[in-house]
Image (cartoon, rainbow, N blue to C red; front, side, top):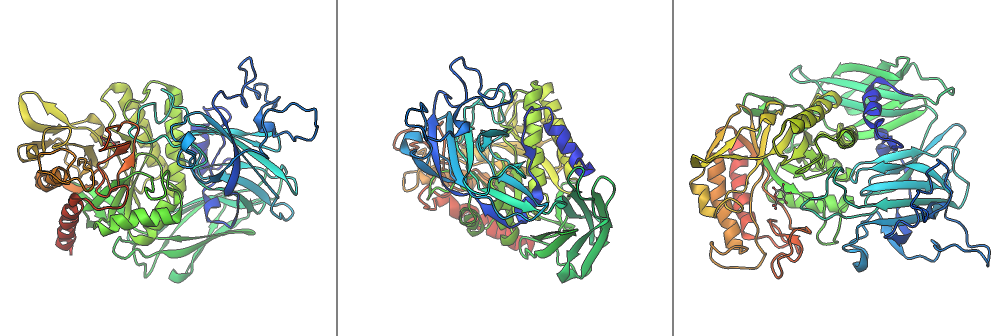
Length: 613
Ligand code: GCB
């Protein structure tokens, strides 16, 4: 069933064939049966399990005619089957393959995963969904020898309904994950981060009643006292049980229990004034238990409520001017290696940001796992979330646009009930052109339509005036469309030596809040030399020492997120004995050592925080 809240999403994804359903946001707050753990794998560099010897996909006719997705049994001693999941090696899900097997460290291609499981107990009429947190980059999913569908995009969730498709015991779930890079993909072939492949986030079975809450969005209205706007979507099976007449939104601690009328499409909305609300702030990250009830279905979540908006050159959190004391991070736990996915990973990374004195984190350059925003809600950190429209995308390719729109929609639907999320970012360092304006303009419109309560931005670039070599100019026309004027700049690293910070002058052509979405430089932890020796901690510290006053000279400055909290793996960083495959711009090394620059930024953030009190 298509309801108004969902309509737009269905429209967005429908231009790509055989897509998995856009993930059901409410699944994340329900009890689940975990399919995490050890899965068998077959590494398949020639995609033997997907194509026949004429290179025609085994599923070309819609029916699976061969390949590893069938997971055939080895029950005939004369049989010829050239794969066997039962005897194959195993790796951990969630988890990328690169960090689990040395042979797969540099591997880009297909890996087939399989696990078997027994069906959860299901009452009459209940429905079951198979939910993937993410798989990078393309996942083709097969259940009991039949194809369920596929999903493109390495960082967003997806589900398949499997009601009626499960056997009581011994179900075979096979997933081909392919992480080849493609020019038309999002991201495209060229990035400064590791292309970790695999089922990188949790896999779950979720059981819901026949009629269930599919999605909801609860947010305070801007500038109208504590008015909570509520929208709930209920889904009933086609030709099956009827929709309920009302849904209930309850916030027991605030004495709220509102019945909303469900229309013929399953859509319910309303508003209520919250009395005695303690608004969410980074200092007091107050969360409330929210219950949404529809017929037999109950979803429970912890949520915070606050407003975020801009006025002139200010960012207003709950109506008060705020400075984003931020830091960028990739989704990597350097201690365990590879993609981060767990609550513990989130606590480690966000804990370091707290220690640095941050109230804000930029989750670069793609949607991080669902735990990040949940833990940030609890810990009191504001977030910037982003999709991997990075560097030079195929601006004129309609499939590329549809792909980016789907990733943005999936991210927003997943995280729009998280108080911590303040900014949706639609791109990073994209080159100026009219097709790029059209492309990004569409994404901005989508973001505002799906979530009118947050800020929209993108990490833009700085331009130079050849007549005035010391001038750095921010005049990207895309800045007309964004709430924050955000840009990356590397004066002192790519742009001259650190002392260049003392000379550079800034011209920002917008009277909007300015956010420096990246700046910084690299250092190898423990390498000490004078401040002119590149890669020394002193060189990096000098950039921070001189960079802070330079940026403070921009009158509209309302925040920053230097690049980056922790060193991270990158295939673009081969310099032996210094980089060794790591981007070294972290303030913390891959072994957890704080570099000198850490203390400089920390002291600045302490001063900023005190000035706000
Ligand atoms: C950038 C990119 C970021 C890179 C960084 C660097 O401007 O946005 O993804 O990793 O510079 O270290 O060069």
